[in-house]
Length: 313
Image 1 (cartoon, rainbow, N blue to C red):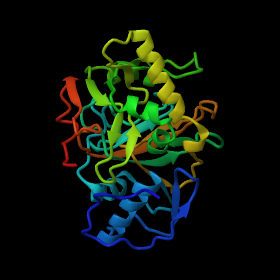
Image 2: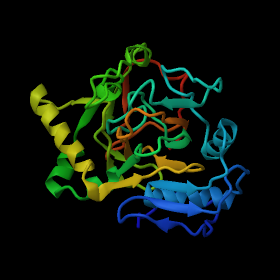
Image 3: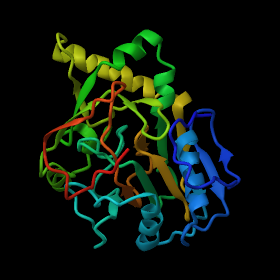
Image 4: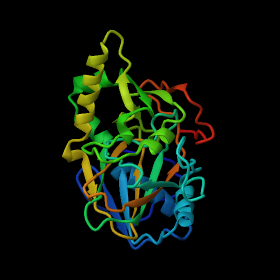
């Protein structure tokens, strides 16, 4: 169980009957209607479940439209816009449509790390599901860090990585028949570059986690060549992707998946033969990451202020 070092004590947690799903990540909650406003103890309990399990699945959540999804997410903080560069397809500023006809997110990533304050929390809801496949994988980057050899932990804590939206994230792996050039042009229409610590300290729990993913292009290491930098980044990324640190979510209608974007990565499995798969995502504004010395991330290019407010840690 995660030790919560500085979580707020404004509301006492209650028992939601959550079921643990794997040793390192994932919990499931049934019987909670999220379409109605939640009281403070329930919100705090969900926060603590995320602190411990990183990803929480709500079965039969009661959320059936964008308005109730946004209202639920808004109980955890101010909402971001749908995306820094991609417009909402729903007419609601905060709702991102994840559509298999436009793009395939089969790259391990943390949402929107190319801005200086990525979302703290992501909520994902299915609208149209394929008859098979289409699972979402979520990895615990905190557990991955804890299981590194101590020497590698200390080394990783000294590193910074350059994150940019000009990445392989929107170039699907293993497919040559998907033309997503229009979506790619929109995704890269404004260039963002941010330097984040490779090891981020979680503001609620004090837990350390590897903070990289598909938007991390190279490490900023004095005296290390670009090729060596890429190899080191791949080494850390491969460690996060180990099955021991990963939870596989098989979608059902009525599900809501909530994950802590500060200490997880996720991956949409492209195994459904390009059948329709439509999801809605709403994210909660986040803080600026800091490393083990308290040094913050730095924006190098791109203004994300209209996308997301910066919240305090």
